[in-house]
Image (cartoon, rainbow, N blue to C red; front, side, top):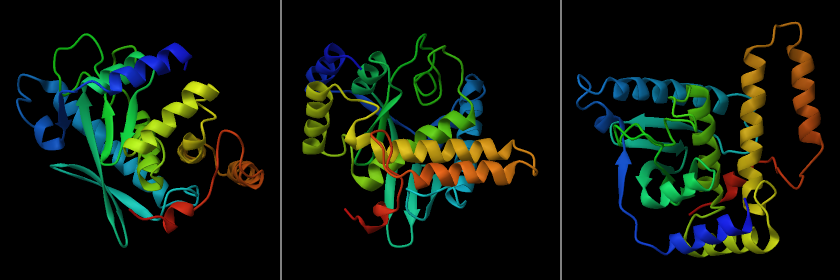
Length: 238
């Protein structure tokens, strides 16, 4: 992310935003005339199943022990002693997030997404369901995005809350950081863990021990400027 792009983001963060929430209930409406809504919901449902398989696996090292629930009114991350909302909101601010090259940005209640052109259906034509090429994204990409943003919410890192957001942009602007941003390191760790999980699904039994050793060696390297694996989120609370 360039200095100019980040500065623009900060400016537009101060602007008022129109928004609406993407939910399964909304996607079930008008499916006779808008069939992509049913397809988007199907991919979202499969994505949550994939994410929960990951969360139940040994590859989950950073997110707390919990599972994602997809209900008519949206998603939530459920732990033994708390539930965190994981709302998906299409907003004007999300449009600017997409314009500077990202798919989503975290909030205390979930994350915002933005428009992908051309727009025929506001419930589907955004960065949660469509890639930069305008095609519907696969469940793997949706699951990866949800898990990444869920990590931000669980750790309260990134633009989760006003002052956290101010600190996030100050670090991005003045230290020119994104991939190595200190508030991205846990979320990046979850993204890496999920990639290891997905790769193992396609590895034959003979090579799975080698793949697992590679993962364990990566963890043993400890924190880096890009990722910090660990279970500290289990000790955090709102």
